[in-house]
Length: 226
Image (cartoon, rainbow, N blue to C red; front, side, top):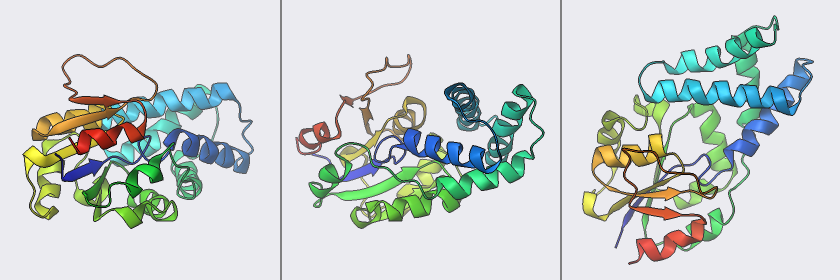
């Protein structure tokens, strides 16, 4: 049985893809940029690459924020200040907090567990989304990587946060997340069990160990209570 549950937020409990798309469309309108699916696809690909570089320690957080838009604007020959655009994007993103299917239903049934949030992200963006969505009611504490000083999946991130988890025990701790390279690999690095939330039924990456795989959040319940 698992007593301590470490939950990722984005694309696990909150629909980050939808939030990101809404915020990106809104800021494009603010800057009089014609929004279309191809533009958003290009941004998503560039953004995903930059975040992977951050996870690998090859890029700093501030570089991700700026370079993703610099690369996009270079591609479309747009003369826009990437730093200012990112600030406007963050102002839109922090207001978006659509939930993933069954997120609250799941959390309502985990009231006897010790729940913690483990998320990579910016405090300015993540905190209002965490609170306004109502998620904060279910968790003892949220560990936002910007505040922690390290990113998932680094062992430094996890070694830092477990100091704040009362009665931490690897054997009774489970991490739940959608990202193989951030959440699941992070769990592997710490030596705890992992649960991959994989609603799109993606293929696992070689070299990453998944203990449990679910396609609906409610499928977590029999796992944590076994």
